[in-house]
Image (cartoon, rainbow, N blue to C red; front, side, top):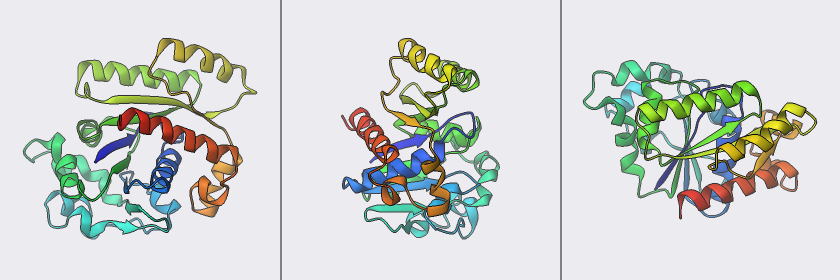
Length: 248
């Protein structure tokens, strides 16, 4: 089982929509896929019409009172399951701080389901915390949406600096442009410049689109309610790039 986390230090960059659409595309191709909504806000759970609640909360998982198998839910899409969000995940750092090897707790929770799925996607909250360190330790790759703006690029530089000084050397970094607007000069300038500085940038660009915003109304991935759209095609291409990087 490969573990892919969507992550960014900055919020509002398209992280959850990426996790939802990548998970959908993977399942559509026949990959047994599990999406874990680790963001206490529960947006991914909302998109799949699943109540954001885990009985006993995060503490019950950490204390091994319940297992991931017990809380995973089937979505409306074949081959795609979801572990819903729970507001208690905001206390994850407190729940694991006194455990043995606290940065390995998420990975330990995932091991029992490793034979059931081909891909586990983690939708993470925008922070550097003990929860984030658990994600960095467990994941094979980070899928990092970047809006082509100065602040978004700056947060990516900060993340690279963090990994130079801390855990994460094993991680495959997969940054890509999200919410791109070709009418904006700054977007066009950064789109041309950043890949020259960072060879790890993926080629696929996810355009800014009202159709992506409609996910909140349709409560489904773009590829489901608008399969012929440019946005659905972009997420399909993004998944193919990710698949080639992490399953090769």
